[in-house]
Length: 204
Image: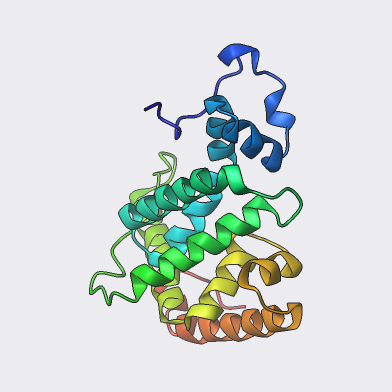
């Protein structure tokens, strides 16, 4: 079976115009047997699914597994997709979040394993260590939020989606999104307040 997770190249089968196609058009082309369309859609949506999964789970390997499963579910439902019923990205975010919740409910003791991050060669060792500490502190704080608050905060402030988009993904009202996000931000601030000096943040 051809690997659908690789990134496309413009020389593939004269497919140069495809990057301008919508998600729905790419999914439709995949349903018609065009594997190159799947590679393009994976390159477009896969990183979003992975980013959410990584923040929800705090575990790189599990985030990769969730992303792979979410994309596989997308391919399976491609022939039955009804154009205009929803945004494909909204559907994928929802599936990703649900898979993450299923995984978290298994009561894993290793939920806060360190997340590998690319190193910046220009940064000093101390700076890199401090940056890692900040990421780990944020992940630890996120992990302590209730599920719905964590979802809203990740989608709004890490994925930078709009409140209406998040409402569609979480199947709640825009007002509920605003409430969850506000409560989540307050909780994060409280959880991180005592570590500002340790993490190298200046008081403001």
